[in-house]
Image 1 (tube, rainbow, N blue to C red):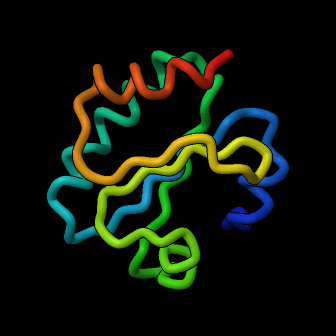
Image 2: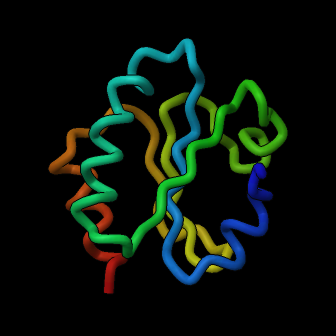
Length: 101
């Protein structure tokens, strides 16, 4: 069952890191293992939600995602942090640490 994006970002107790990506995007593919490692390292405090912009163009537009990869961290529907482009694992962890409370 495909989870409804709005439900996921509004109802989750954890913060949700949304990865806006496309299958044809090489930097997006490079980010996938980095994202998985980061999510593992933060120990379940943040959940990862991958959103294919080709299949969800209206959501990409709604959140003004103009380039990919693009990451938005949500907590109960609010945007806590966002960043576009490739990031190293170290930079991503550093960026997210402040929201782990």
